[in-house]
Image (cartoon, rainbow, N blue to C red):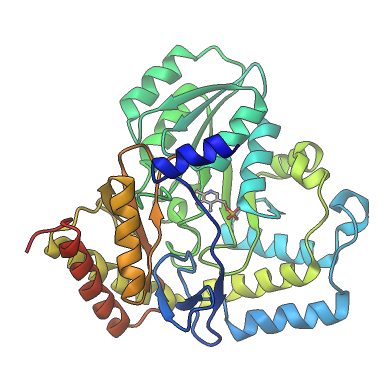
Length: 391
Ligand SMILES: *Cc1c(COP(=O)(O)O)cnc(C)c1O
């Protein structure tokens, strides 16, 4: 272990935990370690700025006082409190689907659902840039992994053709890719899934809450939600809380209650958490101004970086990475920003492909115009200092 850690260090790939604190009343800011420095947090997924919303905190506190800290058992034993059915009905209504299930988090939802739905005789077609929780689900399922090049529909088509006789075929993709912020080609995926009789699973971790009139996500916005057999998203990002949902047919939900191991073999979620999510779901649907605000912040931020000469992938999501390439330069960029009052973390392999280390900015509806203007000035300075952009 020591040798491996040393070689990670050598390659500027060693990771370590740092302690952060929230700034009460300012969900868009944070404090690092014990420093007095109040930083602008450009590395959180709190896209709608809900993580400190008083109504959510109050719902959690009220339920905590009434129902206590823990659920005491798994859902199939005695942990399935009322708060679950209340929340799952609200999710099904929001998503216009037959049934919804709540999972403890997105990682467990992806890993558990994929492992439940496919097995040894099956094949999973997975975008090369899909989230690690999807990849882990596929590995656990023992299904064959057919990885297609990022958003390359021709490659996917060829793989679907090659595996056309397999028992079950599952195409799985992030809707918005977590480290690049670009979108999956969902309409084309829906056509291919039909053509080859495959199932389609879409992970809306970074699009749920953000797209659609009530934050239903990208599949709704693009009008393909009826083609999606397994629709998942998290409550940990735009919703500002914690947890995940899986939506689909009644049969899917019944099947998962019988087969998804994270649901069967893990303790039910604390009722207070479920109540907080339910309140967040109300706010996400009602407060459309948060999506409008986020959209204009994203446009300003992306346009400013482009005009300064930074390389960023196309898109309109609040995930805006500046590709640096080299691990050490990415770390130095992040450190330079921190000195200027901005928390923006360097993302390195294996989270992203080798040679594509980056600073991954993520924006929030809670950031003000002034904060973003200041941030752009700091990013420009750091970019010039490190030779990432030229004057
Ligand atoms: C964050 C993320 C997850 C995991 O969700 P958690 O609730 O944080 O466990 C799953 N998929 C994608 C694409 C993600 O970005």
